[in-house]
Image 1 (cartoon, rainbow, N blue to C red):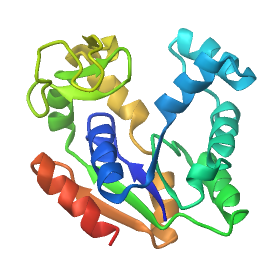
Image 2: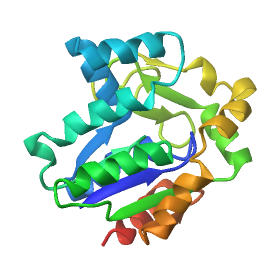
Image 3: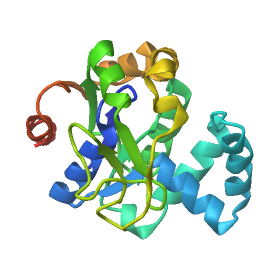
Length: 212
């Protein structure tokens, strides 16, 4: 089973992806983790990606797609995976469709977590990230056990500049899933929309129900 998790920044994709992966035992492929792995390993694609990330720019499609194709070619992806943060546009979606077709597979579910803009701004203002492992926390909805410390690895938590309320609104317009991408999965008959403004556990239940 292959799943795409869609939603704007602050919709809870990272948190929900961790929960779904734990519940289903599916491989969780996060673009952020994929970038960090390639940069740390010093791969050619990692070096290219790092040039863009260091300047705060989006990594080009061809670099991201190259990393993803390599990742799903590994044995641990044979039984399926959940994609978090990919695809970001229709070109990436087509590349993923073609790659999966070559494995005799396809996207089974595209889950769109929907949240109103005013709630997203409130959420992003309280989001913190582990500097070491990348795990996400929220000071209101999902706080760490110890302030400023990651539960998973003990790393330092930090707040990204673009998660501050003053810049969140502009980010939302740039980073929401494009309408054409949502329509791509709607036309494929695999899109399911989930109300992301429910309590955390209720969103998790709705997502799991959508794939069973």
